[in-house]
Amino acid sequence: MQPDSTPAAGIGHNSRTAPIGVEVRLFNSMVTACPTVPARSAITLSPGATIGDVVRQLGLPKQEIFLVLVNGRDVTPRLGVPVETGRVLEDGDVVAFSGPVPYSWGYGACVV
Image (cartoon, rainbow, N blue to C red; front, side, top):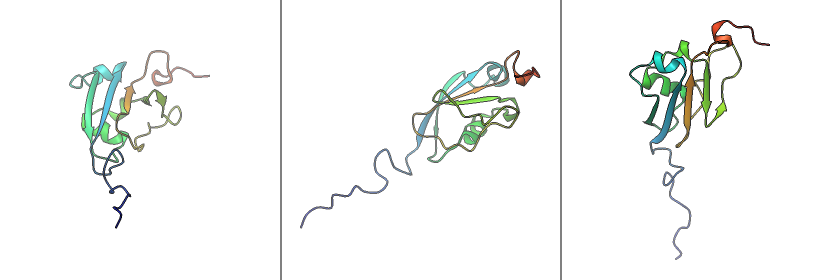
């Protein structure tokens, strides 16, 4: 009888039960809006965690977030709408949050 060659479910990097590690970075006005959160921090989340879970865990003021980057890519759907909080994160992701910057639409400047 040959041993079963199929991998056991839930083992390795594809496990649906293993916690994930995410690096969080705060920029611009988010640094001052969240004085208790370091500008760079590593957090552990449950599998299937979303950007919204990070916002809640760190106590970030959602109304102050104007830009979210995941691994350097903008995941903000478009200007003037709430940021994307439903995106599922993966182990090793770097999530950056930024508040408005001067001369941006967040401060009421016209964007053309």
